[in-house]
Image 1 (cartoon, rainbow, N blue to C red):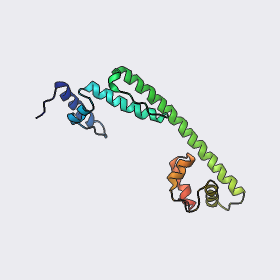
Image 2 (image 1 turned 180 degrees about the vertical axis):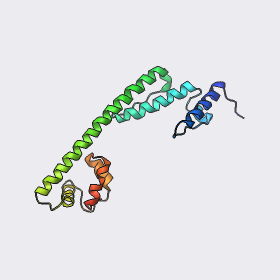
Image 3 (image 1 turned 135 degrees about the vertical axis):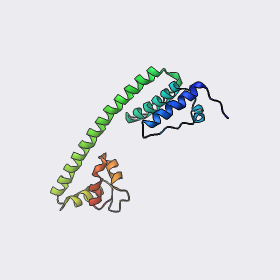
Image 4 (image 1 turned 90 degrees about the vertical axis):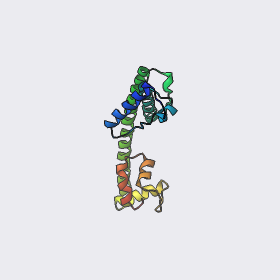
Length: 164
């Protein structure tokens, strides 16, 4: 039987309590956390903050990896707040870009209709062919939305065009 320190038992109790309040359950096995060098609640909180920092910074264009042993809890909280704020701003810019791209794509469809496409379906097919996507395009609307940087709710356009 493994003997655990008082700090480790507090850590397990802390995680169990946190698991009650969230739909995302965290491992409560203390040997799992020991493998990560986490033996107390402060280490655990610092580790969780480094995970949030990594994910939030990836929204800004690059993942920042932080060793939780190198910073205090306050420093990590401040860093986390900064990257979460930057990620929120980056997501606002990305959403605006997707809206602009959708508006431009719809304008392009209308212009192709003016040039002779009999309907939107034909116009979309012509646009995709002109951009190198042929009628046998193997990917679905998700991929095309990704390629054109459109919100995924627009993927139905490509299904109705008979491309996806």
